[in-house]
Image 1 (tube, chains in turn yellow, red):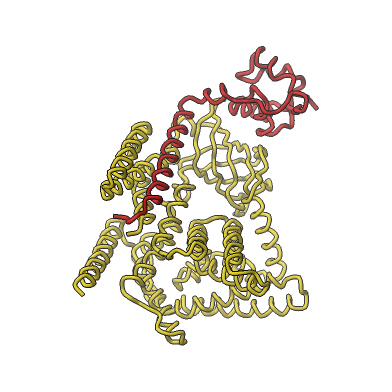
Image 2 (spheres, helix red, strand yellow):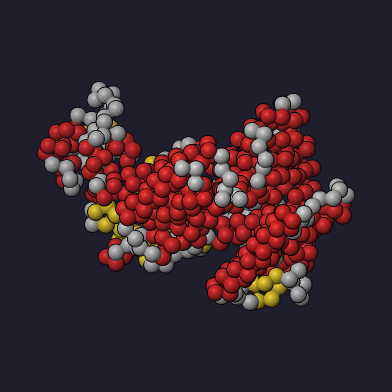
Length: 476
Length: 112
């Protein structure tokens, strides 16, 4: 079994329950402590099964506790008149005509001189037109309303006269990564035509704020929106390039892996620590550690660990579409390959195509109801188109990494940027063509009950497959 | 069920213990916010720290012995609403700062 996956599922179930059930936090702490004592007791008695069950219950109740501060509902009087919000700007603002929007990680609110603890995400619509630094702490003044975006429940409206006050400049690794990200973004904007620079920023740095609706629409219709988010593919290519360069420099294998782990972690910070990139970075670190510590690598276990770590840092991520899509896609691919015995036979071209096809098939099987639930579309052709699109994207990202690596050589810079621009234009044309195909997708929205039903059937089939394989191996 | 080794199980239980005690402390401090102020230790010497009350950030105010999160925010809040302080004594107008409190924090503060 996979302990980290079990703990992740149990913690996630706790978070879901905690979101909808209101229990006293001290009762929950008491319950988790009681199960902790029971786990220790059974562990000492060498009764491992009850000890494992107790561990699962500990993490279930911890999940309950963890979401508690994020599921607070503000009293109605806070929504009357103006309120002060102290918080950190989470990511760069997006301009919409006369106002700009951004998300803040609120710390607390001040209403009539009283502090109200509210550690959640708040959407801001700011009409003050003041340039604000990302990741810095500000004191915002505005009107709070009950409508949010994603998992933020409230929107703060800041009028033109209420300019946010800087309370604290952010420091640390996130700020350094943001500075690097800004510099890379400036390099990319200066090197590529303005029609494709937002696309490059999106696929390389995960910054989608400048991406036009048209481009987003093309990818959404073609069923290839997932490539606009930084995920395992991007992290894998960057990691492979890091390892390759470190090998050229002459580092030993263990040193290479250790340096690559740090670089990938920093890359995850540069990309804003969004759920898919955090997951991919943690899985890569687990993979490197398994080499360094000479342990077997379990993909499902490292997926569980990545999920647990992400939820520990940001429990509200569980309710975001990107988190759900990213984890379900990887779970489907890994378990599909594992339990349906899809193995690499040789390194021939057609074998790689076969592997890509199965990867796309398993990911689509896992994601179909959720994609339909969120985006009201069921894709028909992207199982096949991914076979072309994914390797093509791989070439683009590798070229981009090479371009940034060789940026200082001005002679190469122009040649590379022109050839990458050509590649990207062709890539956009292909996606445009795919989006216009008659059977690319049809519009249908799964209801929540249908989504549950689908996953119940899928998990039951997977369990039957696993148990029948176990019985078969015992008999043989 | 999980086939964990003894060391792995101990590590997992240790992690669980840390998370339980951590969340216990978190909720206790949220319920009793004054508790942390009562055990706060001033790490800076009075000679070295002089904070300009009109320009100090929240963090700088928090570094002063006697100023907690609530008071720091009220100072910032007051300053934003009414403009800079004309005299140190004006701090008495901030809710939560009385004569005694002002006497205690005065020596760490300056004006521009």
